[in-house]
Image (cartoon, rainbow, N blue to C red):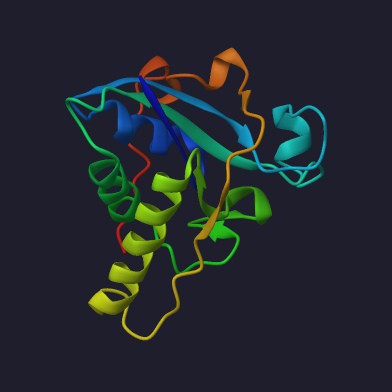
Length: 159
């Protein structure tokens, strides 16, 4: 299995969308990208650790490729919003791609450039960070499968 890690605002909806993709074997809400040695929700939501809310995706490369995961990522959030998505405001809700190897880095950067040139977001700049993967801290159990556990619809925003 391969790993991919994405931050696109609140991790509940991000996790939900990735779980819908055939070939994704696991999607785990968590935290990455901070400078604190641990990450727990109460600290992350206050912006105290530098971490982003992310989803780490395990996927079978014979059934889905990284480009397809990136397409889901780009489609389900606004990559022009700096440090926020919808009503979630702060560095912990930033748009980010954490690459796990040089191939992912190249593919992510190419995908970001293609999106910027597409005109989809007009003249707005794509602010998504493309940065090396760091230690991943799974979110607390009550955050995993949150929408399903609480019988909530997707928290997808329309842009």
